[in-house]
Amino acid sequence: MQAVDWRAEARAHGIDLTRLPQHIALIMDGNGRWASRQGLPRLIGHANGHTALRRLVHGCAELGIRILSAYTFSTENWRRSAEEVQGLMSLLARSAREELPVMVRNGVRILFSGRLHQLSSELQAILRRAEQATQHNDRIILHMAINYGGRVELVDAMRAIAQKVQQGTLCPEQIDEQVIQAHLYQPDLPDPDLLIRTAGEQRTSNFLLWQTAYTELYITPVLWPDITMEHILEAVLDYQNRERKFGGVPAGASAR
Ligand code: IPE
Ligand code: IPE
Ligand code: MG
Image 1 (cartoon, rainbow, N blue to C red):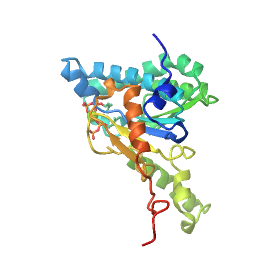
Image 2 (cartoon, protein in one colour):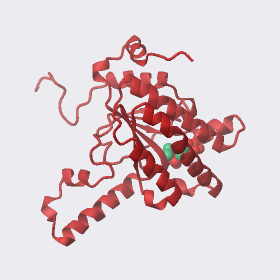
Image 3 (cartoon, rainbow, N blue to C red):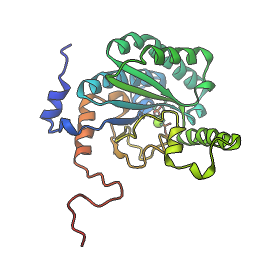
C-alpha cells in the first residue's frame, strides 16, 4: 500500500501546519451502529474500531499531532451485556499485546487513565507492560481512557487531596486549580485543544470533564469504524477557522 504524506495532504486541504492542535481527544462512538447496519455482531464493530484507531495513530503522528486521548471504555460501559464487556476486554488485551511491537517501532508512547485496578490482573499486567515498553518514545502519545469517567477521576483526585489535608501536609486554603490538576490521572498532559466525537451524539458522556473546559468540540455523523485521516483533516481545518477566546476579547477588538 502506498504511504500517504499527511503533511502534504493537510497543506493541500488549506491547513496551517504551524497551528495544528497539539492534543486531540476522541470519543470513539458508533461501533455498535456500524455493525448492526451490516447485520454483524457488535463485537465486529468494536474490532473494526480498534483498527480505525491504529490507522489514525500512525497518520496523526506523521501529521505532527503530539497527543491523542482515546475514550475506550467508560465507567458507565459496565452496564452493557456481560458478553459485550467481556468481548471488549479481550479485544483490548489482544490489541495491546499484538500492537505493542509496532507502537514501539513507530515511536508511540502509550499511557492509560482510569480505574485500572478494577480490571482483571491479566489485563492490568498487559497495560503496564505497554506503558513501560513505550515510556521513552516521544513521537506521539496515545492516551487511552479505560474504565474511565470524568466524575470518578475528580472523586479520586478529591480523595487524594483530602488525605493530604487530613495528614496535615496540605491546607484547604492551598487548594487551587493547579493542586486539583496535579492530582488527576495524567497531570502532565496539556488540555485537549480539539475533541472529536463520531456517530453524531452531542454530549461528552463523562469524558475529560475537567480538561475540556475550553476545548473546541467537533461532532461528525461518521461512525467510528469508518473514520479516516481525511475526516481528521476536516476537523483540524474546522478547528483552525475558529477563534479561541478563553473568556477574553478577540485580539485587536475595539474596547467600545
Ligand atoms: C463505542 O461504540 C465503543 C464503546 C462505547 C465501547 P458503541 O458501542 O457505543 O456504538 P453505538 O453507540 O452502540 O453505535
Ligand atoms: C462513550 O460512548 C464512551 C466511549 C466511547 C468509550 P457511549 O456510547 O458509551 O456514550 P453514550 O451512552 O451514548 O452517552
Ligand atoms: Mg455509543
